[in-house]
Image (cartoon, rainbow, N blue to C red; front, side):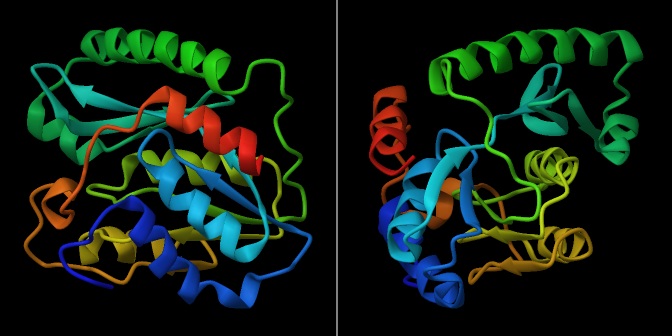
Length: 213
C-alpha cells in the first residue's frame, strides 16, 4: 500500500486486492463503520461484487479528551469499555453514564439517517467483512465485532488500511482474519497516514449506500 495513502478510495482498492478470494461469493456482505469507513468499504464491495451496508458504532470519548476512546457502543445495545483507559483517566461511573447517554442519542439519530426504514441485514451464516478507514485503540471495531457476532455469522473479517500492531494483535483473537497492510509502531492518529483525510459527508455515505446497498 502506498504511503501516505492517497485517499480512502485508494485504501479500499488496495484492501480489495488482499480480499480477492471472497469475490463472487453470495454469502459475503461488507459492513462499513460510518462515516470514514464507507468510501473504503465501497471500493471493496465493488471489487468483490458484494453488497454494502453500515455498522453504526459510536466512540465513547473520555470527558475533556473526547479523542481518547474509553469504549464504544454499537447498534443492538452493544457496549464495549476499555477498562485500562477508564482507570488511567479516572473516569467516574456517573461520567461514563452521561457519555453513553449522549452517544446513544447520536447513534439513534445516525440510524435514522443511514438506515431509514431499511431492515437490518440478516447476518446468520454469512461472511461479514467489517471495514474502517483505520484504527487506533480498536474500541469501535470491537463493539462492531460484538454486534455482528450476536447474529451468528459464518465468519468475520476485519479489513482496515492502517492500525498499530498491538491493536491488530488484539483483534486477531476475536475474528477469523484481520487484513491490515500498514502497522506502524509509531502511531499518533489515523489521519497522519493519509494525504487526503477530509471529513466524509452524510450525502456521500447515502449515495454510496444507494449505489451498492
